[in-house]
Structures are given as structure tokens and as C-alpha cells.
Image 1 (cartoon, rainbow, N blue to C red):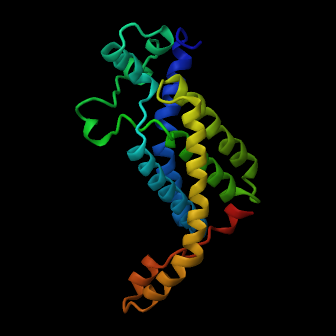
Image 2 (image 1 turned 45 degrees about the horizontal axis):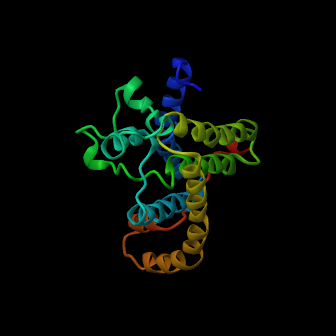
Image 3 (image 1 turned 45 degrees about the vertical axis):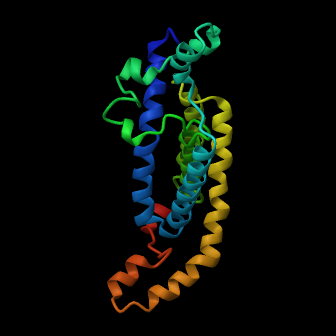
Length: 222
């Protein structure tokens, strides 16, 4: 549907690449300094969902659509067009390939399901809305928080990196990060806090204290 519209393809390439890790890192740094209690919960949700996804990738490796033409050429030369017609738009139009020598050592090519590209953008959107809810910037945060996962679900499919089912699985796995994060807050961190409080160095105690409260200036929260 979008194969002949270069502007649309490049737009989704940009969404896929730039509205994921760069935004997550930037938001995480901001949240650490200005919404520290919420940062702790969001951080744990990201990390725990990532751990769950790694287990799934190990137990059930799944190839992304962009690899299907090569796999079909190798194992089923007579495969129908809906198998061989996928195009890796990131490689074709941006020159970025996951299987390149520079990145191959750091990439698992068979980690299509669940899609953390969508799932983590969903967590990012939830985090943005949560952090700004009730402030004077909520009117801007809510549409941004909705736009990020909504645009990413189309980006991952247009770029042939995932199917919609991968996105659904990514949403489930990522949202599972919240109960794990809440469990850590309720049971693990109180014990960790007790251990940290016994350290003889005040600076290290402040650094390691789980969920330290660093409030934003009132001008940002009203």
C-alpha cells in the first residue's frame, strides 16, 4: 500500500529508528531527575519486560517479515508473493541493515515476537502521560503519549520488521513489567533500603536509595 510513496516510507523509517531508543533514553534521563519515584517504577517495568522478552526470544525464535524473502529463496523458491514481497525499508532507503558486519554481533535476527519496539513505545507513552498528568502540560503529553505507540505499530509493519501479532505480544509482555515493578517496590526495595541505610557513606546511600524523591520545580508541576 505504501511501497510507491517514498515520503510515507521514510516517515515510518524515522519513526521506527528515532522515536524509540533515543526518546526512551532522553525521557529516562529527564524522569530520573524530575520524577524520581515514577522513574523507578518505569525503569523496572522496562527492564523486567525486557527480561521476559529475552526468555521468549530464547525459547521461541521468530524471524521478522524482512527476512522471509531470503528464507524463501533458500528453503522454498516457489513461495507465494505474500511471502517474498516484503521489503526491508530501513536497508533500502536508509542504508541501515541489522545483518551488517557492524551490528550483527549485537543483534538477534530472530527476535520478532514479542515486539519490544512497540511494547516499549507503549510503556514510553504511558510514562509520559503519567508523569505529566495533572500538570499544565497534560494537554500536550496525552496526545504525544498516544501518538508514540500508535505510530510505532504502523512503523514496525511498514518497515517489515514485525507483524501486528508481534505488536500485540509486545504489548502484553511490556505491560507485564508493571506488576513485576510493583512487586519489587513492595517486597524487594524495602529490604534493599534497609541494607543501603547501613552503609557508612552518605553519598553512596543517596545514590543507591531506591525511589529517592527528587521533586520538579513547582513551575513544571502546576
